[in-house]
Length: 105
Image (cartoon, rainbow, N blue to C red; front, side):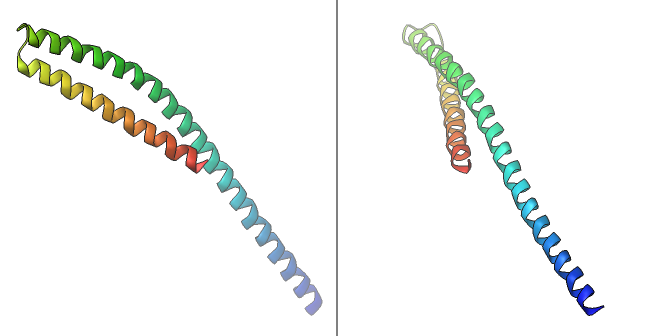
């Protein structure tokens, strides 16, 4: 009876260790998959924000030109500058997110 109990306890401990190992492996795989898809979505966002940044730069150029020749007010020029700066900030945040996601992989 004592030998049987000892044998059952060893089997139980082995199963617990296998479960803990499998749980760790599953958690690791899930973490890698999440970070991979986060990286993909951030790369797509970066592409979109790069295009938006180009457009924003052109809008700012036009607003500055129109302001210099007196066609628009300083408020319109400043609004274009603020939008351009905000777009640059968004792009930097996404690029930093990409670096972070790569580091986690």
